[in-house]
Image 1 (spheres, helix red, strand yellow):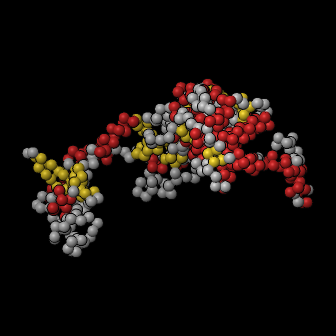
Image 2: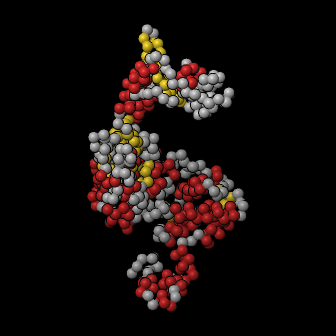
Image 3: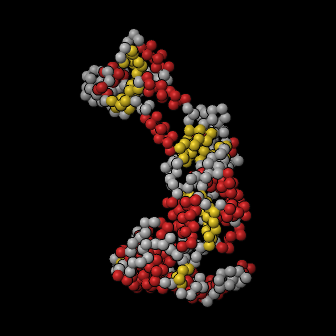
Length: 499
């Protein structure tokens, strides 16, 4: 995929504020053409990816950009109360069409909302809206009438048929109270039960059909949405704990007692593997998950994973929700030296249903790639939002620093480094210096000053002390020099590896 922005002549621009930023998120990834191409295929075909390379080369950016190329989630996951066996709640999957229909059904039981003056005066008085003495209307929360200053008195009489109305109302699950009044009204040649209830400064009217629909809804088992349909299809699970990754059931000190505690279904919490259903699950440094990799493998293979209480001392330990969907695209990332620590079956599953990609660490120093570097600088400034834009002369110094790092760190001649996260730190440091000087643009002298400050501490140690051993020796006390750990520092090579 080639960016349409690589042909502009940046020499004609005064600063990076004129540099166009691609709308396509994958076009914002610099120098990783093969990875971008495979990520686009993986998104469209729902394949897994393993990105291998050092930090800061664009692995996270590629994973996040993939979520823009997959359809929006079409399913909502709910946990439903199981009245026969509360510790085994049911899973309910609702499609978008079903959710829309359910919302229509819920709106059909809302009834008609009217002004208190539109209902019989006796009803308005019993609900507390109308003063029975002066006829003034006010909120039911007003204990005394604002007009006459007399206490509002609820009229309890319903006439000779009040008991009949109470019985009929009870059949529909409603009773007379200060919050609700049951009465009748004539519709054509028949009378129907009607219920008036408080609704803020209004009154809601429920007829027989509405009451019947509400009664049917009340018979349904209560449920809880654990993965909403309106969700971000990109889920970052880097460094997640076991409960964050796999879900959990919260503890209840009352053991889920129906009268005292919280029912089990209400305490179920989805994990990242469930939240990523129909989306992208990104795990950077996946080897840091250790044994948890096998659970990722199970979720990938089965496309569902149970939610259980993970603390054996918790009341949630006895709760289990089976077959919670986990149909996600896994994008895993690691460094080259950690590749051997990825669980073999998990890596096999990625290879069998996806691709492994070795990220580039440098790209050729060509005019087109220098333009991409300037695009990167503009992107970093825009995303930071706290530093000014950069002049083209200052951009040339950033490019030269990228060329130097490619040679010294990546061992690449005539190249530009793609370890762009560290280079982004240099851009921000130059921007902060420009802000401290109250400048409107980052100029070459700001970049030069940042270069003298924004250096890895290893480079500074080498400059001041010569090597790590000399640095440790200069800062150690006499007592520390006799310790075994002191001597071990002298066994570090210049590349920070231990010999």
